[in-house]
Amino acid sequence: MSSPQVVVRGEAMLVVEPEIADVDVTIRVRARDRQTALERCSARQDEVAAVVAAAGDAVELTETTGVSVYLEVRDRRAPGEPVASLHTRLTLGRLEAVGELVVALGRLDDVTVSGPGWRLRPDSPALERARLDAVADAIRRARQYAAAFGAELTALLEVSDVGHSGYGLRVAGAMDSMARFESSDIPLDLTPARQEVHGAVEVRFAMSPPDQEVFRA
Image 1 (cartoon, rainbow, N blue to C red):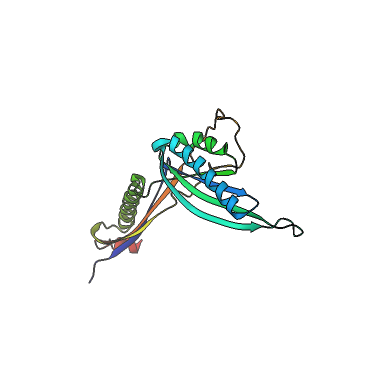
Image 2 (image 1 turned 90 degrees about the vertical axis):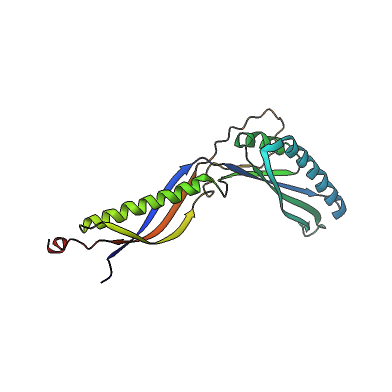
């Protein structure tokens, strides 16, 4: 006769400070022709690059996320206007530098800044802590179930990593900056949104035979 088994799901939730922030920068210019629109877009891109360079190692990654050149028709009675746009995502590792960078970028003409989006790094220690806390929760639950039957755990049979989720999704503290800033002295006190990290694991244990008196109660 095989030993009785108990299968449990262990869960854990941590609330931690974010580790990095994403800021999206959009350049959008109109002109009388496509060539001029592209030239102006390139000039604005150089200005954005200069601001990013001035931020030093606070900006860890710069990625182009989209480029478009199209004819915008705002009045059917008039010819359309060529529009050129460029979308860039900046990833900052020093969160205290986010506000200053957003202000500096927001002062540029034809530039829209949105964000920040707070998140954890993919290899954040918080993810490991959530997984291990989930394992501890599974062991605690299994022991409680076994004890309820007058038994105890005897062996680990199977562990299934359900994974983790939730980190990087809480952006309640995000800010959208749609206007130009006329002064670099404007302070922005940004409060990073704390991140929820959820860990889960399914574990199967063997346990000793239950106390038969439990079933007679």
